[in-house]
Length: 334
Ligand code: PHE
Image 1 (cartoon, rainbow, N blue to C red):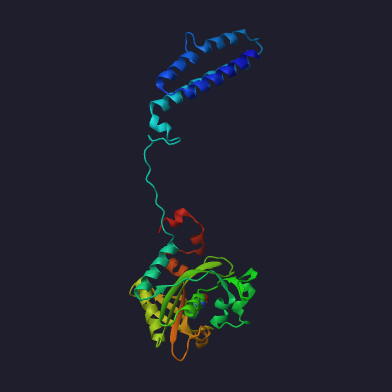
Image 2: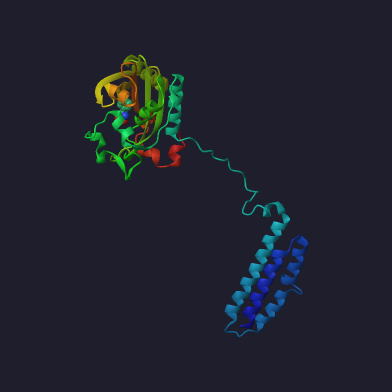
């Protein structure tokens, strides 16, 4: 089919010429050469079309129109580009469109809560300490006075890691509590100590509206030569009233943790409801001994609070899973 191949040659040469035209004037010359009414090459093609077998005319005619339109369109596009050169250097960007305001990101509601917690505790003289999320059983259990047969060490209650040990034959696991940081800080520092540590903890709980296999805790530790339970209560009361307002009440209920003695569960009364904040107590003498302190010389208190719970209260969030769904519409409210 001679006509068809002539069309293709014409198309290829026309598009090349359009592409290499670098000014409105040279482009106009290209237009006259390929599409000009009087002597343009398109007229020759039209003549070829008249000569083809009538049976083939529909197919060949369609191809002719295709080529003609394509060359015409590309010519118009190129003309627009050459008319506005600044645009062609910014491929794909139409600078004539109206501007849209940029939507800035924001901090996650939990990050906001954590920052506020650190800020409040900082004003009470507590500095921020950090510890690893991949822990060993010494820091997560042994040094915290949690014996081998304690249910908290059950494989069903923990994310033990398959790589059996970190060092010294210690079993590795994702920490189940931030109390590990108490040990790490006391191992490295002499009293007096006043720290908080905020971070993720992991437990293989069944996930529902109030449970997640990963959540955040704030650990507090104060050690000195005469730290008492009255100070524990005062610090927690000051913390809660600073975060939620003056009308918060604090209550201690007797409880048990292997690493505190006596131990309590801490509740606060807010807007008429008792809400559990977390666990607390006086650091157990066995823990002080494990880190090389003399329990006759120093005493201390520790507490561990769940962060999600506070954040959910403050913002009326009813499902803990919302925090990790990455739903921008939800997150952009805070
Ligand atoms: N680590 C305890 C828990 O996760 C909370 C706690 C911290 C209790 C410090 C006492 C002292 O449940």
